[in-house]
View (cartoon, rainbow, N blue to C red):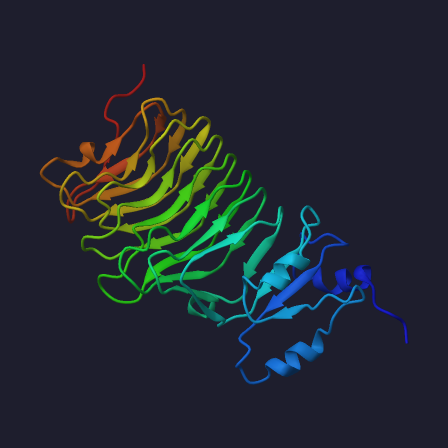
Length: 305
């Protein structure tokens, strides 16, 4: 019988995963207590390098040790997978893609059972996509910490399981050239969260098409230290804080384009125009509303000549 090799495996995997390289390794993660898991393991025995391909945890140390930096390795996580974390889980393999399979509520779930739980993208080019991240305790310090340059977080949903459980900060981004797009940050409408997405000296980062709602004491999207070349656009932000409710806030020394965002504030006393802090950004066609059944106004109100 002919022996399979990396190229023959690539032929089948690449039909459903379009950007996997011909010599990348593909790992699989599923719930080890599920019916049929043993059969699943048997379908994907160790490859010809002797590397095990099926694991029970996204953060399995053996799996991550077998992944090679810069090879474009991929971790596919099965629909409905659930695991809990209580400490920071660091992904440190350059260029690793960690992708959840499934749609809607059947996306794999990561539950934060301690405030110290987090997921850190600690080196360059890591890609995290299509997970439900669920706070099950009060004031989880942060959901995702993007430290490496050129990392991407896409199609993830940050949620809470009961009232008073929350992420204090949904995501922090300090790496350069990040891509944060098509995510949901679904915070409760009571006191708890401070930031939805917090940038800090994150040059040339793109924050696009995210839906952010909750009672943020600071801002839905904020840049707390000077970032250059930002692109922040097409986000929907509803800050339900009734005092000093900021939707997007940039530092005075930040630079970039803020375009086509739709924002809502619950601070009707200060008014919609107070719901942004424009800093050093260039703002194009952004609208904000401060009440029920009223249309938005262009913000900032001052236009260029």
